[in-house]
Image (cartoon, rainbow, N blue to C red):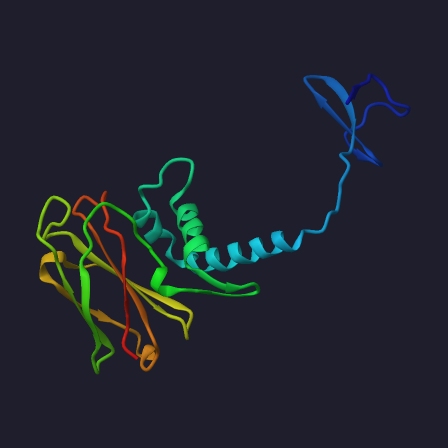
Length: 211
């Protein structure tokens, strides 16, 4: 970069050919444009981009849920970045470009509260799902008033349905109203709990929905 007082036709601002004219605090500067290189991405880079695009696109509708579910990651790595990293490493299966998500390995919430195991998930005639779970002993990390949250995914429709704070842990059951269009589809579900203050969560538990 060079400083100059007068060009052939005086000072100028902006790009002219391969140089750029600009000023800073009354001083005129001229610099050349940076060289550009067009290097095609390698197969490994293209494969990594494909994996990132697939996982981030699948998780994007759950951004607010992941911000709560992965709230323990509040440093250099954001909750969404942590979720994407996990699913790329642990839940993505297959060989490129034919990747898919192993729904049994998907985790939408990670925390210190204890999990409760889903005993049954039954689809009723009125497009509702009746979910029953079993709790361990109640403690500081497993309270009766922890709130149950559900995520239901329909791969045939490519759609998530979420249910926030639908029942207290101590109730041990919840009824989820599903879209009528989900009838007959295979569904995948996840249950996790959030404490009353909203600053602690349990790791999500996977369960398969009825056919």
